[in-house]
Amino acid sequence: MNNLKTIREGLGITKKMLAGSIGQTASSIGHYESGRRMPDIQTSHQLAIFLSSFGDTVKIEDIFPPNPRSEGWVNPDSTR
Image (cartoon, rainbow, N blue to C red; front, top):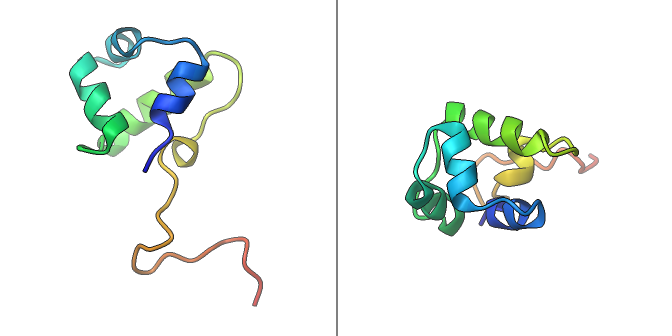
C-alpha cells in the first residue's frame, strides 16, 4: 500500500498535472496509486521533489512506506 493518492489529493493535484510534471502519463500515476506498478527510483525521486514543491517536505518513504512484512526489514524505531 502507498500514500501517493492521499498526498496528491490532499495537495489538490490532478493525476494529469502530476504526470505531466514528471514526464509520465495519468494512467501510470493511476497504476502507481493502485499498487499495480511501482515506479523506478528516479521516478520516485521526481514524485517526491514535485510533491515537496507545494510546501511540506515529502520523502519517498512518505509516498511508499516500507512494508514491515518484507524479508530483512528492520524497524529503525525498535530498541534492542
